[in-house]
Image 1 (tube, rainbow, N blue to C red):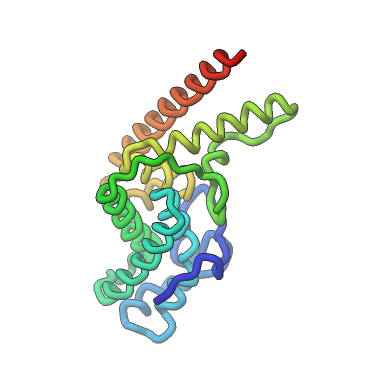
Image 2: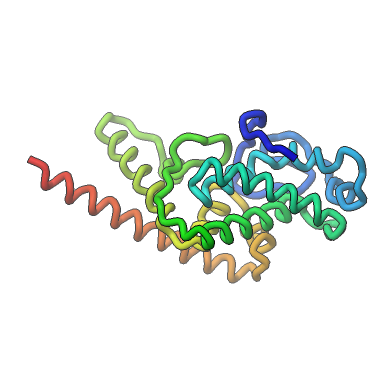
Length: 224
């Protein structure tokens, strides 16, 4: 299977995750798709790829900060899904099943490669929200617009400094828009644990953002 990022259209993120019967971009995904995939029904796997490739790519890109790595991981996600199709649990969500594979692969990839580079979320905004979208963009005057731009940049950079598990939480919840229930399914932890992890990850992101903003302000103050 060869996955081509440029041939696919991005899907739109919503505040809560969809059931398998309704995709985020408005294109319906039949609720029985997972069962057809498990049975090996002709065309089912291709439908899964078409339905979810953009969101899976976006998640992999934001987790790794690398276009090439995201493309490789996206292909690997669907290859693993194809190999494991017979083990798909009847009635389960294809959506969260794929995200679970993607997140586990991305976390494993980052840990193995010991990535430390800060990944900007500018560009490649095929779907979901960018780091800048975590900040309200409704500015009135140029000065405020510039300030919000700087804050958005700081948030994007701060996301790249988070621990890999914290970054996964922020990406899935605040950028991809998964619900708490979906997060619990993807991470395979209780709902209460998910909520506490989201709280900690957001606190870590806020602290990292504050540090970056403070450093930028200090640097500007030193300029003649």
